[in-house]
Length: 197
Image (cartoon, rainbow, N blue to C red):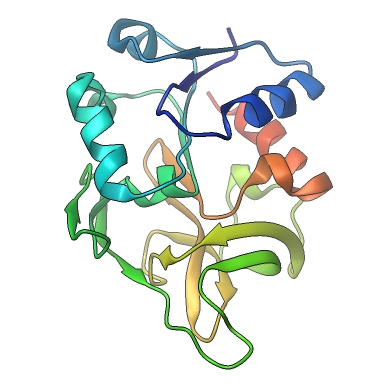
């Protein structure tokens, strides 16, 4: 298997599988901690609320396994948010792999919450995950909470303020947007992930 997709109960599991399949990758969806621990790469997807997602990860003992992983891990959308210390949604204690608190987006005229649709990302520093991704490339977002830009931010998006669009610490990466729904740029990011060792 090229990657194991954690069965976090989200509705985007099938679209993620198809996105990797289009790249010629072999994936498996699993909630088995032993399968996750032995995977070459791990993807943590997520939709819905942080509290419900953390309860699912804790009840399956996945929450205890994730911080100890040493292979490349990619959190997507809510999956990225769960990598942080906590979320204002709930509020909820998260996995604590990345420092900081995920915050609610502030609605404003022309900027409804949830932030839903195409937006540009602005790389802040080079990283293998972003190889071939250009400044102001468009990707697809669906979220009401976001991590502020910080020292783990690889790329930002502007939604009234700079929010983390891509993050990394050690072997843990995250994208706030959905690469599986982000056309060529998203496919490039997933392909880059498959090259990470």
